[in-house]
Length: 131
Image (cartoon, rainbow, N blue to C red; front, side, top):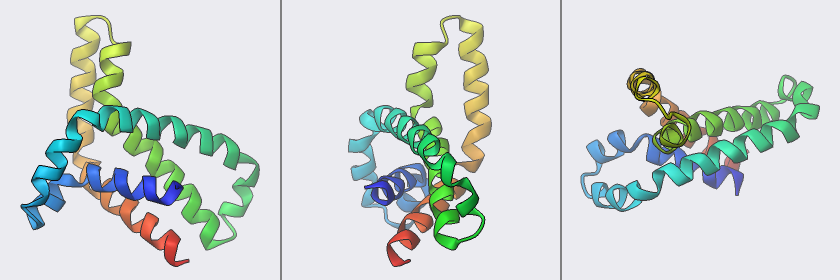
């Protein structure tokens, strides 16, 4: 389930690129959009959980391709979860208007890495099935 979640999250994160290549996919992403925040929070929580579980095996990440791939997918899940769940999390955490403005500015800067992060997550998820 871990690679599938990484692939799905990566596709949603890179939706601008997918829609540019396949215009028919826009309808699918429009249907998923209301649930994007919940998916992001779930990916963030699972990514942190997997990172905590993976910490005892961290040395293996630097000695094998599979270990590095798992660590890369964990980091990608945490980052994608943060990006997708940002709107939901900022509404819950940021109570003042100044905090909301700062979070909006941060999100605007993070959107530059959204598509490359999504593409790399999809590639890592597919590669995990191949290896």
